[in-house]
Amino acid sequence: MNPITYYIKQALADYYPDSEAASLAKLLLTQVFGFTVIELYGGKDRSFSEYEQKQLDDILIRLQKHEPVQYIIGMEMFYGLSFEVDENVLIPRPETEELVEWILKDNKEGGLRVLDIGTGSGCIPITLAKFLLHADIASWDISDGALEVARRNCRRNDVKVRLERKDVLQTSSSEEQFDIIVSNPPYITEKEKAAMEANVLEWEPSVALFVPDEQPLLFYTKIAELGLEMLVSGGRLYFEINRDYGAATVGMLERLGYHHVELRKDLSGNDRMIKAIR
Ligand SMILES: C[S@@+](CC[C@H](N)C(=O)[O-])C[C@H]1O[C@@H](n2cnc3c(N)ncnc32)[C@H](O)[C@@H]1O
Image 1 (cartoon, rainbow, N blue to C red):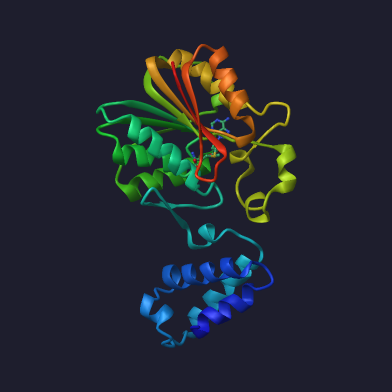
Image 2: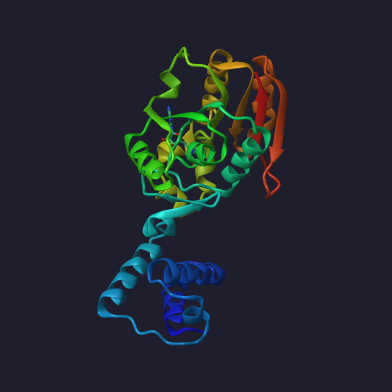
């Protein structure tokens, strides 16, 4: 094993399972220190300068405190695109890529009007702007910090999204009409906190994560009600959902009059996303 890889794995041994420490070592060496595959696996030694050693040790201390590596290196990949991330935004998740894939497969026509609610890093609207044909995309978030990151990610990926600071819970419908409304809103109930990993609970923004125990569908109900006004007839609503509330979310949408409500599982087999037609 490369001596630096060994050094990193030793420093993380008490904090992460072996396989995770190994992937963290690989990520740091390639993304931060520019190691090539030959340097990584070829057994060829590469000595660190004093500056690099200090940089590595600072990173290891942050990892020992369970800070997510994506915040440390400042980026995450999503659907093949690169996104800046910091503590203002949720780190984009693979389940959300599955939701985006569903939208892209369903919607091949050009010129669609799309609204994303709860933009975070901008991973959903930016990916849709990149891969839908000539779409006009608006996106709302309550957090100024998240909107700043999303704005930078639009530039980074060379797309245009109309970003707006808006509290969806305080919004009554606007005149604007959309063909698609998509949202991955906060959906973790307070009682689920106990089962959460420290790297999520202590580092990711709580405004992106939590809803009160007694209102698990708070955002979904509000967005579905707005959708009745803001979606064109035949317009599509797409949600990422809490796996424990699949049936409840489907029921709520059907009661509001949506049709063809479809619940899908993610790759881990959990109820994770819903499509409904206005
Ligand atoms: C689960 S995160 C999703 C972020 C991003 N769409 C993604 O999939 O990675 C939810 C987002 O909703 C935003 N949010 C929370 N409450 C909101 C509200 N009342 N109105 C608008 N956005 C809100 C948070 O700031 C956060 O960025």
